[in-house]
Length: 117
Image 1 (cartoon, rainbow, N blue to C red):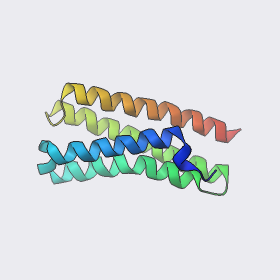
Image 2 (image 1 turned 90 degrees about the horizontal axis):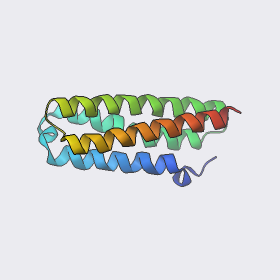
Image 3 (image 1 turned 30 degrees about the horizontal axis):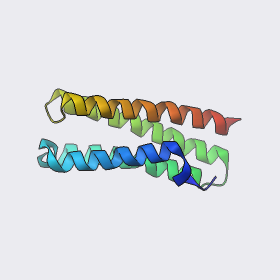
């Protein structure tokens, strides 16, 4: 515990948040302040909760934050799908981001199981 930057899931989640911030600054999303704020918040919540959870004293506390990160991943996935359907996100970009979300979710599930033992 406490070395969150070494966690592969944190690294992927941080990279995903960076991708989302870059995307929201150069596409039509940049003009939709409500959508932009929401998608950025959910994206940054994922690595933030992984980091906070990993730095806490007990596995029970850590697991709670990992579940929050998992929920934020589902929230972000939903926003990406909506963004694609309303034309804010291209098919290829959406596919990449959806795959990132799914991978992070699977990794969080495994991390939760490992910390539950």
